Figure 1 (cartoon, rainbow, N blue to C red):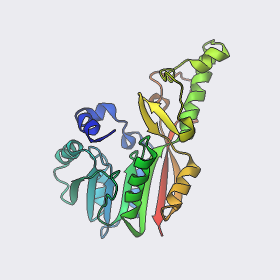
Figure 2: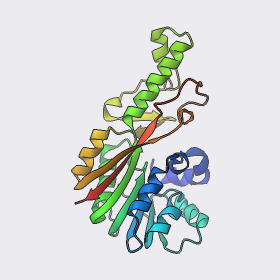
Figure 3: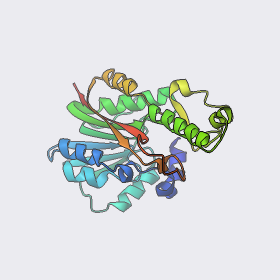
Figure 4: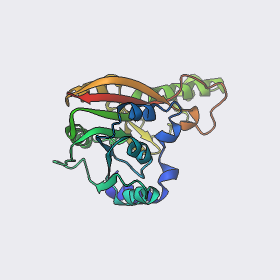
Length: 252
């Protein structure tokens, strides 16, 4: 998922990329931004894409820096929000060694640190955490590995209810397109629509943030309907629902 990939994706972003903002039915992210937003402080939207969160951030901070790898996504974000006078746009590859951002009091990073490469993720997280001022807050949203396994379990349950024998129920279903299974499951790397995507354990995130000088203040689940995993889930498939992890952390 390099710059060329995201530049190509910009034109069909709304159709291809899952919108956390649109599916955050409990309004968790908006509530956190309202809680920590201050009109005398600055914020960074790390990996802003086409700018879904920019109006929210612009209302609660003096200035906002919209950062993305893709210049085409940034152009689309700017075109969508021409009246946000306190938002600046910058194309930066935060996974490049030595990448830096101007200091900020608040950072929002939603499903950005998800590359399959450990080195890529580490550099991106390093740059994101490094640019926060002391006392600043990071809101980090990432796919939950536990949720991925829950979806697999639910699929097996569905197959069994449809009369499949246990061995076939385990092998069948929407994850069967993995031709060699899931050889990187021990890394938390799961293929979604044939794209390898890093998923995280709750405890893993706590350690990663602590190692970068951030103290976890709040952990939440952003829950989504089962239609986010299956095209036509059966009616009996209800809670527990799939989710992303949402972390709020403060820099010491």
